[in-house]
Length: 145
Image (cartoon, rainbow, N blue to C red; front, side, top):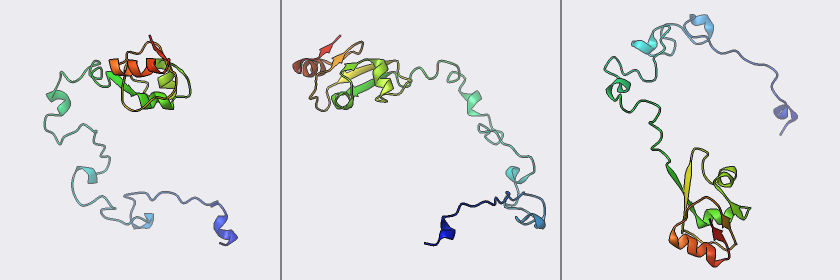
């Protein structure tokens, strides 16, 4: 490999300007926009929700709109015993799970289920656990509060 290939580029080529004739470097006439239609016209900025003039979905389903529409999503996070095994700490709360990125910060509640294996002592505070998960944690000397 030559030393010329390792050098960084110091020149910057400007973007090709659309719709400025043949001398712009892109070419004239349709200039890469296709032939006809709303997107080929100058100044066309179509909103994301625009559906070609038919009644948009935003107006079709008014009950979906509003501030409470995301409350149903991600109601309770499920945490397995394998997730608890990977944690570097022995004290587990909802904040430590978010800190170590076991669950996403959007979750307000979580529950521990018995999936996988646990080999270390873990103390859990403020997170409910299923009956079998509680048994597995207390068998190793941990606690669920």
